[in-house]
Length: 369
Image (cartoon, rainbow, N blue to C red):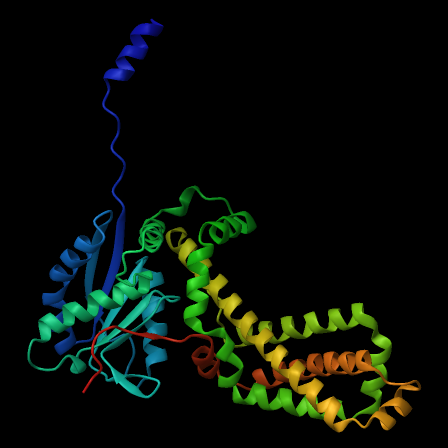
């Protein structure tokens, strides 16, 4: 019986693996964008399949203005992101009749790999050869969302292929909570690094003028306060470290929570994508705040060496001031200044924080004339 059972199992054909399907939402505003989307969906499916034959592309055209004019690019991206999560899409490409700008330069479109959202401006395509231009721009934008630079590097192509398979994976069999997040982090570390780099986190503080102003003001006040000198001298390295970590965490949490940058998945299918988004957001804000802290430390050290007279510093400390004392003072001042930056960040508008935290990558197509 055992031999017959084994023979029967060998004769049964093996089950074919289920196809990997990537769903791309093609959201077009009513009017000209909807007309372009109607003719674009089929050609875009073929173009993406030719570039990535290992997955099946499901392009779903939808007519929806998403937001009422007047609106800016950030509002459109946020609305498209919400529609993506609601519909359980993997990526979304918006066609709009509103001109787009990146760094005050008109462009055909731009893409945010962190959000999984790309935006294409139909007026920028021109009147002649609009269909061909739309296909080229749309294909380039989707490639940007995937991190595909059209190169021949096998590692990069393997990374894009893994990204596609993960987008289409149903996470219903994954574990919950911290274990799930750890699996996403370790399995997508290289992808996560690319998403964070696309956000340019080192430019975060420079874009938040109120937070930066508050941080500098707090640092200057602390620099000329003798009580701060004595605190820095008596705190010790351990306490200074705790204060520094607390200031960085408090500022990062203020930015994330205050601007509602943290997403919650609406379904299990998008859990992995939302987890990646949240990890990239947290890393972006944290690196941005650490960059701010490093700059404030250098400014505080330079200010203490230039403005704190050694004789006064020695009198305030009660002993001869050395290099270590100046370093401790700069350390505490930078921590207090960072806390001041957190207070200033609370005064920033949600839109200002989002614009600072996320940078959109322009497409490879031509800029608008």
